[in-house]
Image (cartoon, rainbow, N blue to C red; front, side, top):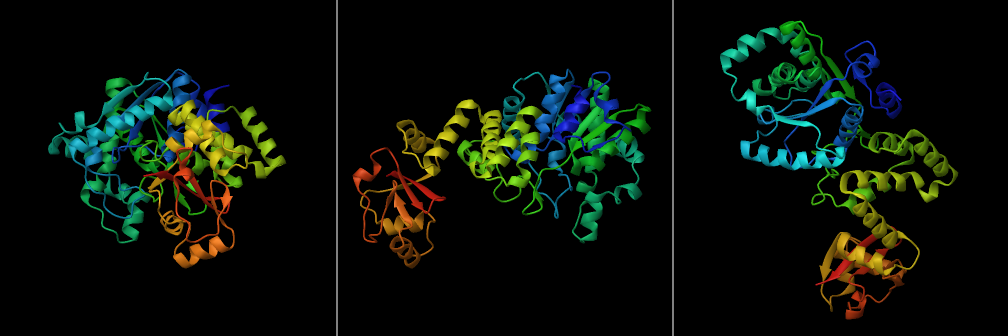
Length: 412
Protein backbone atom coordinates (compact mmCIF):
# COMPACT_ATOMS: atom_id res chain seq x y z
CA UNK A 1 0.00 0.00 0.00
CA UNK A 2 1.33 3.45 -0.90
CA UNK A 3 2.04 5.90 1.89
CA UNK A 4 -0.67 8.28 0.63
CA UNK A 5 -3.20 5.46 0.89
CA UNK A 6 -2.11 4.64 4.43
CA UNK A 7 -2.36 8.28 5.55
CA UNK A 8 -5.81 8.66 4.01
CA UNK A 9 -7.04 5.36 5.45
CA UNK A 10 -5.98 6.33 8.95
CA UNK A 11 -7.41 9.85 8.72
CA UNK A 12 -3.94 11.39 9.07
CA UNK A 13 -4.00 13.70 6.04
CA UNK A 14 -5.80 17.00 6.66
CA UNK A 15 -4.11 19.80 4.67
CA UNK A 16 -1.32 19.76 2.12
CA UNK A 17 0.39 22.49 0.12
CA UNK A 18 0.37 20.46 -3.11
CA UNK A 19 -2.69 19.71 -5.21
CA UNK A 20 -2.53 16.03 -4.31
CA UNK A 21 -1.17 14.11 -1.33
CA UNK A 22 0.48 11.65 -3.70
CA UNK A 23 2.80 14.38 -4.98
CA UNK A 24 4.24 14.73 -1.49
CA UNK A 25 4.32 11.13 -0.29
CA UNK A 26 4.59 8.73 -3.21
CA UNK A 27 7.44 10.07 -5.35
CA UNK A 28 11.04 10.64 -4.36
CA UNK A 29 11.89 10.00 -0.72
CA UNK A 30 11.79 13.19 1.32
CA UNK A 31 13.38 14.59 4.43
CA UNK A 32 10.54 15.41 6.81
CA UNK A 33 10.68 17.63 9.86
CA UNK A 34 8.47 18.08 12.88
CA UNK A 35 8.95 20.80 15.46
CA UNK A 36 8.65 19.73 19.10
CA UNK A 37 7.54 22.25 21.72
CA UNK A 38 9.90 21.95 24.73
CA UNK A 39 7.58 23.69 27.18
CA UNK A 40 7.05 20.48 29.21
CA UNK A 41 9.21 17.50 30.14
CA UNK A 42 6.77 15.05 28.59
CA UNK A 43 4.64 14.68 25.50
CA UNK A 44 0.97 13.85 25.93
CA UNK A 45 -1.43 11.52 24.19
CA UNK A 46 -2.45 14.27 21.76
CA UNK A 47 1.13 14.17 20.39
CA UNK A 48 1.03 10.43 19.80
CA UNK A 49 -0.80 10.63 16.49
CA UNK A 50 1.86 12.92 15.00
CA UNK A 51 4.62 10.55 16.10
CA UNK A 52 2.81 7.63 14.49
CA UNK A 53 2.51 9.64 11.26
CA UNK A 54 6.27 10.15 11.30
CA UNK A 55 6.79 6.46 12.06
CA UNK A 56 4.87 5.70 8.85
CA UNK A 57 7.20 8.02 6.94
CA UNK A 58 10.24 6.29 8.46
CA UNK A 59 8.91 2.86 7.60
CA UNK A 60 8.34 4.04 4.02
CA UNK A 61 12.00 5.00 3.64
CA UNK A 62 11.82 8.75 4.22
CA UNK A 63 14.23 10.58 6.54
CA UNK A 64 12.90 12.29 9.65
CA UNK A 65 14.22 15.29 11.55
CA UNK A 66 12.89 16.15 15.00
CA UNK A 67 13.52 19.79 15.78
CA UNK A 68 13.42 20.85 19.40
CA UNK A 69 12.38 24.47 19.69
CA UNK A 70 15.15 25.51 22.06
CA UNK A 71 15.17 28.97 20.48
CA UNK A 72 11.49 29.40 19.65
CA UNK A 73 10.61 27.84 23.03
CA UNK A 74 12.07 30.93 24.64
CA UNK A 75 9.47 32.95 22.73
CA UNK A 76 6.32 30.86 22.55
CA UNK A 77 3.86 30.12 19.78
CA UNK A 78 0.69 32.24 20.07
CA UNK A 79 -1.38 29.52 18.39
CA UNK A 80 -4.21 28.01 20.45
CA UNK A 81 -3.55 30.23 23.46
CA UNK A 82 -5.60 33.12 24.77
CA UNK A 83 -2.73 34.77 26.59
CA UNK A 84 1.03 35.25 26.55
CA UNK A 85 3.09 32.17 27.40
CA UNK A 86 5.68 32.11 30.13
CA UNK A 87 9.18 32.22 28.65
CA UNK A 88 11.48 29.28 29.37
CA UNK A 89 15.09 29.34 30.42
CA UNK A 90 17.80 27.41 28.58
CA UNK A 91 18.34 24.81 31.32
CA UNK A 92 14.63 23.93 31.48
CA UNK A 93 14.43 23.58 27.70
CA UNK A 94 17.45 21.27 27.64
CA UNK A 95 16.04 19.07 30.39
CA UNK A 96 12.62 18.90 28.73
CA UNK A 97 14.12 18.13 25.32
CA UNK A 98 16.14 15.20 26.63
CA UNK A 99 13.10 13.66 28.32
CA UNK A 100 10.88 14.09 25.26
CA UNK A 101 13.49 12.60 22.87
CA UNK A 102 13.54 9.39 24.93
CA UNK A 103 9.76 9.08 24.65
CA UNK A 104 9.91 9.58 20.89
CA UNK A 105 12.51 6.83 20.44
CA UNK A 106 10.20 4.42 22.23
CA UNK A 107 7.22 5.28 20.03
CA UNK A 108 9.30 5.09 16.84
CA UNK A 109 10.86 1.80 17.88
CA UNK A 110 14.17 3.09 16.47
CA UNK A 111 16.69 5.88 16.86
CA UNK A 112 17.16 6.16 13.08
CA UNK A 113 16.25 9.85 12.91
CA UNK A 114 18.03 13.17 13.27
CA UNK A 115 17.65 15.41 16.33
CA UNK A 116 18.38 19.13 16.11
CA UNK A 117 17.77 22.15 18.34
CA UNK A 118 17.01 25.46 16.66
CA UNK A 119 18.81 27.34 19.43
CA UNK A 120 22.01 26.29 17.62
CA UNK A 121 21.33 28.74 14.79
CA UNK A 122 18.73 31.14 16.16
CA UNK A 123 21.02 32.13 19.03
CA UNK A 124 23.60 33.28 16.48
CA UNK A 125 21.12 35.33 14.44
CA UNK A 126 21.68 39.08 14.85
CA UNK A 127 18.84 41.56 14.90
CA UNK A 128 20.01 43.20 11.66
CA UNK A 129 20.21 39.83 9.91
CA UNK A 130 16.75 38.97 11.17
CA UNK A 131 15.22 42.18 9.86
CA UNK A 132 17.12 42.19 6.57
CA UNK A 133 17.14 38.52 5.58
CA UNK A 134 13.89 37.28 7.12
CA UNK A 135 11.60 40.15 8.05
CA UNK A 136 11.46 41.69 4.59
CA UNK A 137 9.88 38.52 3.17
CA UNK A 138 6.86 38.71 5.51
CA UNK A 139 4.17 41.39 5.42
CA UNK A 140 2.33 42.57 8.51
CA UNK A 141 -0.85 42.52 6.40
CA UNK A 142 -0.66 38.75 5.95
CA UNK A 143 0.54 38.04 9.48
CA UNK A 144 -2.40 39.72 11.24
CA UNK A 145 -4.82 37.74 9.06
CA UNK A 146 -3.58 34.41 10.43
CA UNK A 147 -6.11 32.75 12.69
CA UNK A 148 -3.64 32.37 15.54
CA UNK A 149 -3.01 36.14 15.58
CA UNK A 150 -6.44 37.31 14.47
CA UNK A 151 -8.18 35.37 17.26
CA UNK A 152 -6.02 36.98 19.91
CA UNK A 153 -6.58 40.46 18.51
CA UNK A 154 -10.32 39.88 18.16
CA UNK A 155 -10.52 38.99 21.86
CA UNK A 156 -8.38 42.03 22.68
CA UNK A 157 -5.89 39.69 24.35
CA UNK A 158 -2.40 41.16 24.35
CA UNK A 159 0.09 39.67 21.90
CA UNK A 160 3.67 40.85 22.19
CA UNK A 161 6.04 41.46 19.31
CA UNK A 162 7.94 38.44 20.66
CA UNK A 163 5.07 36.05 19.96
CA UNK A 164 4.11 37.93 16.80
CA UNK A 165 7.57 37.11 15.41
CA UNK A 166 7.25 33.37 16.08
CA UNK A 167 6.19 32.39 12.55
CA UNK A 168 9.17 34.25 11.06
CA UNK A 169 11.57 32.21 13.13
CA UNK A 170 9.74 28.98 12.29
CA UNK A 171 10.02 29.88 8.62
CA UNK A 172 13.74 30.46 9.10
CA UNK A 173 14.03 27.02 10.74
CA UNK A 174 12.57 25.45 7.61
CA UNK A 175 15.03 27.37 5.40
CA UNK A 176 17.97 26.31 7.57
CA UNK A 177 16.96 22.63 7.51
CA UNK A 178 16.41 22.82 3.75
CA UNK A 179 19.90 24.19 3.20
CA UNK A 180 21.67 21.93 5.72
CA UNK A 181 19.77 18.64 5.33
CA UNK A 182 17.76 18.96 2.11
CA UNK A 183 14.56 18.99 4.17
CA UNK A 184 11.60 19.53 1.84
CA UNK A 185 8.55 18.67 3.96
CA UNK A 186 7.36 20.10 7.25
CA UNK A 187 4.54 18.34 9.08
CA UNK A 188 2.46 19.21 12.13
CA UNK A 189 -1.00 19.51 13.60
CA UNK A 190 -3.62 21.53 11.76
CA UNK A 191 -3.26 24.39 14.26
CA UNK A 192 0.24 24.91 12.83
CA UNK A 193 -0.91 25.21 9.22
CA UNK A 194 -0.40 28.95 8.79
CA UNK A 195 3.05 28.84 10.40
CA UNK A 196 4.17 25.91 8.23
CA UNK A 197 2.75 27.48 5.10
CA UNK A 198 4.58 30.72 5.88
CA UNK A 199 7.82 28.71 5.82
CA UNK A 200 6.95 27.19 2.44
CA UNK A 201 6.32 30.65 1.01
CA UNK A 202 9.45 32.09 2.65
CA UNK A 203 11.68 29.45 1.04
CA UNK A 204 10.03 30.03 -2.34
CA UNK A 205 10.69 33.76 -2.14
CA UNK A 206 14.19 33.36 -0.76
CA UNK A 207 15.50 30.52 -2.94
CA UNK A 208 12.81 29.85 -5.58
CA UNK A 209 12.70 26.22 -4.36
CA UNK A 210 9.48 24.27 -3.92
CA UNK A 211 9.04 22.63 -0.54
CA UNK A 212 5.91 21.20 1.03
CA UNK A 213 3.60 21.33 4.03
CA UNK A 214 1.35 18.61 5.44
CA UNK A 215 -0.84 18.62 8.54
CA UNK A 216 -2.95 16.09 10.41
CA UNK A 217 -6.24 16.84 12.21
CA UNK A 218 -6.18 17.47 15.94
CA UNK A 219 -7.72 14.89 18.22
CA UNK A 220 -10.54 16.65 20.03
CA UNK A 221 -12.39 15.62 23.15
CA UNK A 222 -15.94 15.76 21.82
CA UNK A 223 -17.45 16.27 25.28
CA UNK A 224 -15.41 19.44 25.89
CA UNK A 225 -14.58 20.53 22.34
CA UNK A 226 -10.93 20.96 23.36
CA UNK A 227 -7.89 19.25 21.88
CA UNK A 228 -5.90 16.80 23.94
CA UNK A 229 -3.21 19.13 25.22
CA UNK A 230 -0.75 19.37 28.04
CA UNK A 231 -2.21 22.65 29.27
CA UNK A 232 -5.68 21.15 29.70
CA UNK A 233 -6.59 19.73 33.10
CA UNK A 234 -6.37 15.97 33.27
CA UNK A 235 -3.84 15.66 30.44
CA UNK A 236 -2.71 12.10 29.73
CA UNK A 237 1.09 12.24 29.66
CA UNK A 238 3.48 9.77 28.04
CA UNK A 239 5.75 9.99 31.11
CA UNK A 240 4.74 7.11 33.43
CA UNK A 241 5.64 9.25 36.46
CA UNK A 242 3.00 11.79 35.43
CA UNK A 243 0.39 9.36 34.08
CA UNK A 244 0.86 5.72 35.05
CA UNK A 245 0.26 2.97 32.46
CA UNK A 246 -2.81 1.98 34.49
CA UNK A 247 -4.20 5.54 34.36
CA UNK A 248 -3.56 5.73 30.61
CA UNK A 249 -5.25 2.35 30.18
CA UNK A 250 -8.27 3.55 32.15
CA UNK A 251 -8.51 6.77 30.16
CA UNK A 252 -8.61 4.86 26.87
CA UNK A 253 -10.89 2.16 28.25
CA UNK A 254 -13.43 4.88 29.02
CA UNK A 255 -13.47 6.20 25.44
CA UNK A 256 -16.96 6.76 24.08
CA UNK A 257 -18.33 4.39 21.45
CA UNK A 258 -18.64 7.19 18.89
CA UNK A 259 -14.89 7.94 18.90
CA UNK A 260 -13.23 4.59 19.61
CA UNK A 261 -12.89 3.59 15.94
CA UNK A 262 -11.22 6.93 15.16
CA UNK A 263 -8.81 6.40 18.06
CA UNK A 264 -7.98 2.87 16.89
CA UNK A 265 -7.10 4.26 13.47
CA UNK A 266 -5.11 7.26 14.67
CA UNK A 267 -3.46 6.05 17.86
CA UNK A 268 -2.51 2.42 17.12
CA UNK A 269 -0.51 0.43 14.58
CA UNK A 270 -3.26 -2.15 14.01
CA UNK A 271 -4.02 -2.66 10.33
CA UNK A 272 -7.40 -1.76 8.91
CA UNK A 273 -8.67 -5.35 8.64
CA UNK A 274 -7.94 -5.95 12.34
CA UNK A 275 -9.70 -2.73 13.33
CA UNK A 276 -12.65 -3.68 11.14
CA UNK A 277 -12.91 -7.06 12.89
CA UNK A 278 -12.63 -5.41 16.32
CA UNK A 279 -15.40 -2.94 15.52
CA UNK A 280 -17.63 -5.73 14.19
CA UNK A 281 -17.18 -7.65 17.44
CA UNK A 282 -17.73 -4.48 19.46
CA UNK A 283 -21.01 -3.68 17.73
CA UNK A 284 -22.23 -7.22 18.35
CA UNK A 285 -21.99 -6.66 22.12
CA UNK A 286 -20.91 -3.10 23.10
CA UNK A 287 -21.13 -3.97 26.81
CA UNK A 288 -17.94 -6.06 26.54
CA UNK A 289 -16.07 -2.94 25.32
CA UNK A 290 -13.89 -4.96 22.96
CA UNK A 291 -12.89 -1.86 20.97
CA UNK A 292 -11.94 0.12 24.06
CA UNK A 293 -9.96 -2.77 25.54
CA UNK A 294 -8.10 -3.26 22.25
CA UNK A 295 -7.36 0.47 22.08
CA UNK A 296 -6.05 0.57 25.65
CA UNK A 297 -3.77 -2.45 25.20
CA UNK A 298 -2.34 -1.22 21.88
CA UNK A 299 -1.63 2.36 22.96
CA UNK A 300 -0.09 1.44 26.32
CA UNK A 301 2.07 -1.14 24.51
CA UNK A 302 3.35 1.49 22.04
CA UNK A 303 4.11 4.02 24.77
CA UNK A 304 5.23 1.85 27.71
CA UNK A 305 5.82 -1.66 26.35
CA UNK A 306 3.94 -4.97 26.37
CA UNK A 307 4.70 -5.81 30.02
CA UNK A 308 3.28 -2.49 31.28
CA UNK A 309 0.18 -2.97 29.13
CA UNK A 310 -0.32 -6.50 30.49
CA UNK A 311 -0.01 -5.28 34.08
CA UNK A 312 -2.43 -2.41 33.45
CA UNK A 313 -4.89 -4.94 32.06
CA UNK A 314 -4.38 -7.21 35.08
CA UNK A 315 -5.05 -4.36 37.52
CA UNK A 316 -8.16 -3.30 35.60
CA UNK A 317 -9.58 -6.82 35.53
CA UNK A 318 -8.75 -7.33 39.21
CA UNK A 319 -10.34 -4.07 40.31
CA UNK A 320 -13.37 -4.02 38.06
CA UNK A 321 -13.93 -7.66 37.12
CA UNK A 322 -16.32 -10.08 38.77
CA UNK A 323 -13.91 -13.01 39.06
CA UNK A 324 -11.84 -13.74 42.18
CA UNK A 325 -8.55 -11.85 42.10
CA UNK A 326 -5.52 -14.05 41.35
CA UNK A 327 -2.16 -13.84 43.14
CA UNK A 328 -0.72 -12.13 40.06
CA UNK A 329 -3.63 -9.69 40.13
CA UNK A 330 -3.01 -8.83 43.79
CA UNK A 331 0.68 -8.33 43.06
CA UNK A 332 -0.12 -5.96 40.19
CA UNK A 333 -2.62 -4.04 42.31
CA UNK A 334 -0.09 -3.55 45.09
CA UNK A 335 2.60 -2.18 42.76
CA UNK A 336 0.79 -0.62 39.76
CA UNK A 337 -2.56 0.76 40.93
CA UNK A 338 -2.82 4.32 42.27
CA UNK A 339 -3.16 3.91 46.02
CA UNK A 340 -3.19 5.66 49.37
CA UNK A 341 -1.64 4.53 52.64
CA UNK A 342 -3.75 3.77 55.68
CA UNK A 343 -2.84 2.50 59.14
CA UNK A 344 -4.27 -0.58 60.85
CA UNK A 345 -6.84 0.67 63.37
CA UNK A 346 -8.00 3.58 61.20
CA UNK A 347 -11.79 4.11 61.03
CA UNK A 348 -13.46 2.78 57.89
CA UNK A 349 -15.69 5.83 57.67
CA UNK A 350 -12.64 8.14 57.49
CA UNK A 351 -11.11 6.05 54.71
CA UNK A 352 -14.32 6.29 52.70
CA UNK A 353 -14.14 10.09 52.83
CA UNK A 354 -10.37 10.35 52.28
CA UNK A 355 -10.65 8.07 49.26
CA UNK A 356 -13.23 10.34 47.67
CA UNK A 357 -15.96 7.69 47.84
CA UNK A 358 -18.09 10.03 49.95
CA UNK A 359 -18.07 13.76 50.58
CA UNK A 360 -19.05 13.69 54.26
CA UNK A 361 -19.59 11.33 57.19
CA UNK A 362 -23.33 11.66 56.71
CA UNK A 363 -23.05 10.54 53.10
CA UNK A 364 -20.63 7.75 54.05
CA UNK A 365 -23.13 6.44 56.63
CA UNK A 366 -25.86 6.47 53.98
CA UNK A 367 -23.70 4.43 51.61
CA UNK A 368 -22.89 1.95 54.39
CA UNK A 369 -26.52 1.54 55.42
CA UNK A 370 -27.59 0.96 51.82
CA UNK A 371 -24.96 -1.75 51.28
CA UNK A 372 -23.01 0.27 48.69
CA UNK A 373 -19.60 -0.04 50.40
CA UNK A 374 -17.40 -3.10 49.85
CA UNK A 375 -14.01 -4.02 51.29
CA UNK A 376 -12.20 -6.77 49.39
CA UNK A 377 -15.54 -7.83 47.90
CA UNK A 378 -17.42 -7.98 51.21
CA UNK A 379 -20.35 -5.63 51.77
CA UNK A 380 -19.94 -3.58 54.95
CA UNK A 381 -22.51 -1.71 57.04
CA UNK A 382 -20.81 -1.08 60.41
CA UNK A 383 -19.90 2.62 60.53
CA UNK A 384 -17.69 1.99 63.59
CA UNK A 385 -15.56 -0.67 61.90
CA UNK A 386 -11.77 -0.24 62.07
CA UNK A 387 -9.18 -1.58 59.62
CA UNK A 388 -7.59 -4.85 60.72
CA UNK A 389 -4.29 -6.53 59.86
CA UNK A 390 -6.17 -9.26 57.98
CA UNK A 391 -7.68 -6.67 55.58
CA UNK A 392 -4.23 -6.37 53.99
CA UNK A 393 -3.39 -10.07 53.70
CA UNK A 394 -2.68 -9.71 49.98
CA UNK A 395 -0.57 -6.56 50.27
CA UNK A 396 -3.46 -4.20 49.59
CA UNK A 397 -7.13 -3.69 50.38
CA UNK A 398 -9.77 -2.71 47.84
CA UNK A 399 -12.45 -0.28 48.97
CA UNK A 400 -15.40 0.15 46.61
CA UNK A 401 -18.60 2.14 46.36
CA UNK A 402 -20.76 0.29 43.91
CA UNK A 403 -18.89 -1.28 40.98
CA UNK A 404 -17.03 1.62 39.37
CA UNK A 405 -15.83 3.78 42.30
CA UNK A 406 -12.69 2.21 43.72
CA UNK A 407 -9.80 3.10 46.00
CA UNK A 408 -6.76 0.90 46.63
CA UNK A 409 -5.47 1.05 50.21
CA UNK A 410 -1.95 0.02 51.22
CA UNK A 411 -1.06 -0.62 54.86
CA UNK A 412 0.99 2.23 56.30
